[in-house]
Length: 189
Image 1 (cartoon, rainbow, N blue to C red):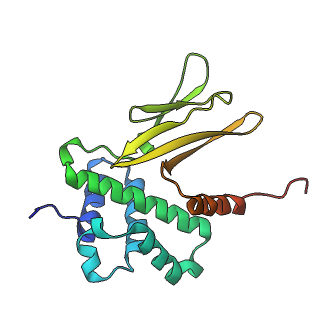
Image 2 (image 1 turned 120 degrees about the vertical axis):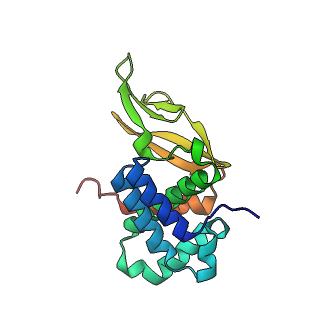
Image 3 (image 1 turned 30 degrees about the vertical axis):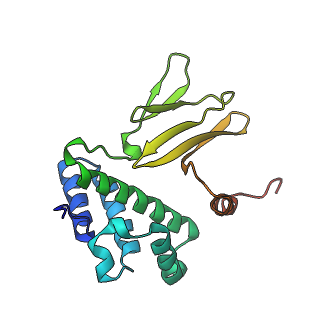
């Protein structure tokens, strides 16, 4: 039997520790802890004892069904994203504290490359901003492969869609498309 603690209480202790020791920025640790606790508050007591056993999508759907009137859709998606990152960091830390590195965007650094293009780095993976280059890089994190997709949106503007699971389904893609459409403004108005 493992002596490792994957409970909700241990998750809270991890984020307190990470903030105090500077493993994560204090605001980052607090926002992830808050999001995780809000969503996971709907769990039954027995579900809180080992967070590895929960189905995040199912738990989030339950939370959404109970709390959706209290939050804007985009806020719910931010909470879900923070929960996923919180659990990923927590599981990684409990699994091997001595080699833990946060899987957070605070670890990304921006630098100018010699040709003047912005370079964004996350760990050892990097994607250069170059609207003529269509680069898709795979990032493996906790046995789930994610991809980063640069999308030339319009002249002079390329965005990156990151953390897409390599096994993204059509229904998940449709859900993402609907969320993105909610942010669009009417053209020519």
